Amino acid sequence: MEIPYTVEARPDTGLYNAKVGIWLFLASEVMLFGGLFSAFVLLRVGAEPGTWPHGWQNVTLGTINTVVLALSAITTLMAWVACKVREFGKFKFFHACTLLLALTFLCVKMVEYHEHLNHYEIKLKDGQIADGDMVENNKDADHVVIKGRYVKSEMELYDLRAQKDIPESEITIPRAQIDDMQSYGPWHNNYLALYFTLTGLHALHILGGSIVIGYLWGPGRKLWKKDPERFTNRVEVSGLFWHFVDLVWIFLFPVLYLT
Amino acid sequence: MSELKTAKQHNAPLMGESELHDHPVDFNSYLRRCGAVLLVVFIAVGFMIWTSFLPNIGWTLKICIILGIAACNAFVVAGFLMHLLSERKMVYTILGFTVSFVIGLFGLTIWAMNDFPKGTIIH
Image (tube, rainbow over all chains, first blue to last red; front, top):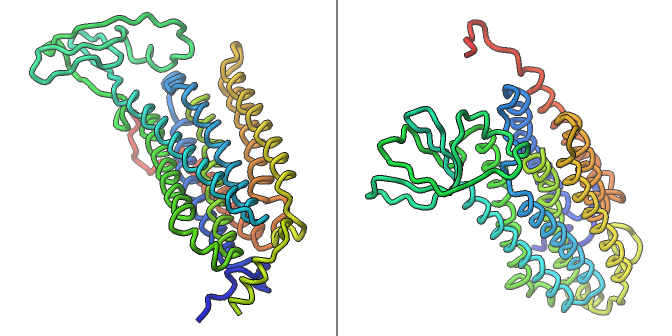
């Protein structure tokens, strides 16, 4: 039995079935990210003045990822156009570019995560706070070494944009002086919890999209010989998902990196 | 039937028929359109970053400007790359429902923000 409306449009919807399916799926995705964005708004608006972090993200890396994702959106669309004009060689080229760009995005994201997880806030018993990148944290050693600075209160750490040229030096801290030590992971505060949740979920979508695109570029391409129009529709549907992922990033970047 | 379809499609002209737009797809014109979209996106991103570093502007105004630019950026991507400017009624209906639900989601959250149960102690 042949699956109906994989190529031709259904008379009542005017679309082939997979396209209706992807739009319904994207609607559910909008609700998923919408819920998380509303959580962000709630916590951002409810934060005490001066306690919401600014300048905690590496804007350069965020911008690189924005450019990478914008380029991948273009290559995805061009891969579909190549299928439409029956140029399979161009399709392979553009989809390979999309895959490479997706991998680049994920690599940059990993670098960012590493930066956060290697950055520590160390509360000392005398009330001071040492903040910086971990250099040495040997469990057997009686001290830790960070590259950073001392501050008197946590408030000094929130708005890094306002503090230009922060002097940093290598600081050795005896473990006996440490009251509490925490990296800038999702457990650190609300902002970082939202940052890791939103960007982690987004990165999972990038990974999922890459698997689908990789399948169409690799084993899935057999369909091209049998039914090119159906294959083109599959490329279009995967492209719509990819553009949605790009759209989410268009809002994530300013919300998390710039505001 | 499947064979007939395949044979027909293998003989398809270089300018394929798009079901979406009901007019031919031209590779070069798409490439030019994509270049233009990319340029707009890059300019918008640059403008957002520039705005975020502007001194003497409060965060509220900055956030409004930046999110306004992001919304324009999203319109360009959704309109041209996802073809939302020339879609079928069915897609607009789905999106209409989604948007109303999202507005409700945001609205209810913000509306209930200060609606604490009786006896709540705030530290």
